[in-house]
Length: 512
Image (cartoon, rainbow, N blue to C red; front, top):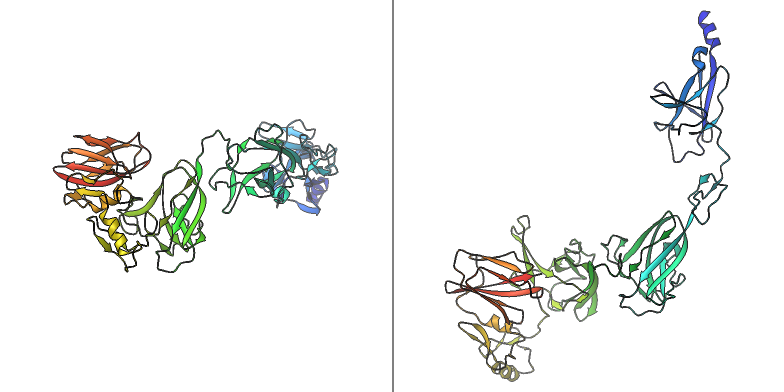
């Protein structure tokens, strides 16, 4: 009987919270008091209820909060319904006088009637009556593109993107002051967009570098990225680039050319793989130009790169000879062959069209079988069809050559240095001195590649160092030193002859 009287003296209180204006999704709603959380019941769309019984002596200063997914409400501190203590800020009510009413999350009053719209006062479509943002804000966005270094022929530059369905010439830019910097301001709803610049209804378009930091996508669809959340005046960018035209370029357009006419196996599509595309397989496939020639242009950054040609996603790949002049040897103990890799190397500082090269070779494919042996004799390396129109023509050319060899200095010209061979290196290849050691382990030139300064590591005395360029022209002679410097010379391959203890050792170095 006494317990029943005690229960009847308690105050029944029902607390309700409206989450219609809660920012985000939620799963669990709870009533929180005294460090304890109690589940609330969903009684209407986004409205939750909790009923409890409170003794009168606790009802005068009854504190509580609502909780969503384990996160308590927070308050600024000047609300009319809150109580501030050193430990917490909570809602407070005198249940002996007042009954709880439906309140809005983190507010003391009921939720206002929801009015959806753009609540950003800086937006083009700001709605002063809206109280709930519906992601509909529209902002002014101004684009600039500098065409001074575009090297393309055009009449009118245009802006294309996901915001106009890549429509072509529907968003034409203007250059009223004729300074080759085109601009346009358009209204865009807040969001994330892809875009690029083009001209004359897609007659030309940007060829953006896939590793630049303003782009998204993968070849062949590389576009600029734009996030709109406010009014924007974008920086002026150079055509094809993420920065101004004054900013030093970190990439250029490189055209690769490959002759597959000497490859006897089966393949479908050759490709180029290297450090510039992470050896990706068939992501950089070459286009068929006919007659066994394949080529394509790609954007490549200006680092020193190594690469090779392959086909059909690495089904086949070049097997390059380590003695070729266009390769770079990279030691790697983890490589499949146990010592390293032989790849072509690439170093450039401008838009570049690489020479046509033969599969597995540094130069174009040679279909000839007639050739000269360096002694004025015609020999047939192949099936007898020959390079020249007739054997007599071959003999005539062989016997009129002016490049020759001497046993001390190697290659020299008998008259005006015009030479029979295409360059003096062809003659050098025919000058096989007995004292030359092509494969050696008694000398090491380092670092190789280098920016210009090379050191020679050998226990022997170095009497003389001779350095030749690709044409076989001597460009440097150093005596009684174990170093040489090519800093003042162009980047590329150089051939080095080191005379040590009456022995000549030949090798090549790369200056980048």
